[in-house]
Amino acid sequence: MTERRSWAEPWKIKMVEHLRVTTKEERLAAIKEAGYNTFLLKSRDVYIDLLTDSGTNAMSDRQWSGLMMGDEAYAGSRNFYHLEKAIQDYYTYKYLIPTHQGRGAEHMISQIMIKKGDFLPGNMYFTTTRMHQELAGGTFVDIIIDEAHDTESEHPFKGNVDLDKLQALIDKVGADKIPYFAIATAVNMAGGQPISLGNLKELRKLSLKYKIPIVHDMTRVAENAWFIKEREDGYADKSVAEIVYEICSITDHATMSAKKDPIVNIGGFLATNDEDLYLKAQNMVVMYEGLHTYGGMAGRDMEAVALGIAESVQDDHMRARVGQTQYLGERLLEFGIPIVKPIGSHGVFIDARKFLPHLSQDMFPSQTLAAEIYIQGGVRTMERGIVSAGRNKETGDHNRPKLELVRVTLPRRVYTQSHMDVTAESIADVYARRESIKGLRFTYEPELLRFFQARFEPLD
Ligand code: F0G
Image (cartoon, rainbow, N blue to C red):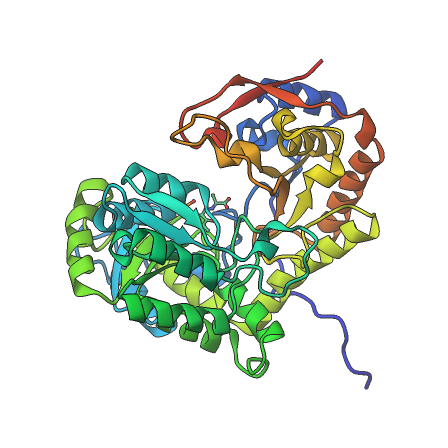
């Protein structure tokens, strides 16, 4: 028998959801009505929805059955204890506070740990994470390695912390002004790029030396683990589950958007090994989310998360998950489209500066490109550039990130390889007519997290 070279998904399809194919005229009208913001499109006007991998996943038959096992008790639901055990067994953390989604956990940890005037070093910002740090009076400081800001760099661990940048910050502001290191796995804004265990262990030394805890944004930790297995010396024979366990074990607290790795549609949590933080968060969660044994989730949702965690750390699942992203990225490269390299875990990130070099950053190249990709083929993607970066809270000017990207994000277990082909071909069609594309200007700019609801119009 010949050795098998291709892999295929470790599941088959039991139920389908129909998609609506629209005409170009319909799409032009829809994007205009949406103020050229893909967040404001109606889902029924979208053919292939690659806006986000957040809450857009397909649950397994086991997870759907789990919904029927929901124990909707106000207090002490059995699903809470199942979820708590899953978090202890797979993620090492002792205490669990469920929340409605990731930002609920970010809100609590920021309010509990950050004092006005504090600094929060992190391996690149994430929109909601930084917003909550700022609302609590903190200032985010980017300490990711420089390669992360360079779309051409093929560094295998572009999520790594630059320990010299971190040391310089500690020397400058003092350890007592740094409540924690904010460390994400599979760094979203860098293009789904991993941090290595070697780097995390070095960071741990600084954390112990200065008694500064590590808060782990573990939203896509299993995806990060896959890259460690593939790229880091000594990990090829370890399972994703073992690597996830090791990553979590060298951090102190965690925030999780369960809408990603755990393959569900809603949910999140705060997890910690620290009893003091746990008690404070227990007190706080009843004010903002719900009782501490359900936070913002129904019993059935907690059950689906508990089951999804176990599925998310299976090697076969992760091979297919990351494999599909690699496939789409390689198709785009074949068409000559500039993307972030190496190809990340949860999406392919198009370099809008290179795609539309004739547009200045103030003409919102990524926002423009996301709108054009939708018009071309009904494929919905997302801006990750100057609009997402918001404004500087002191000067009021735009934050001007080096990375000006369009994220083509893959929900888990939802689309097939043919959808990836159609997506790559429609982006290639936009590339062929790129020189005729003009930029956008704001017609409405919300104050906070503006990218979600901002509206634009085309420049003349
Ligand atoms: N941290 C990371 C790394 C995220 O990617 C997200 C959400 C959050 C925290 C916040 O979690 O949405 O459950 O409140 N990312 C989504 C995305 C919105 O499309 O990347 P949430």
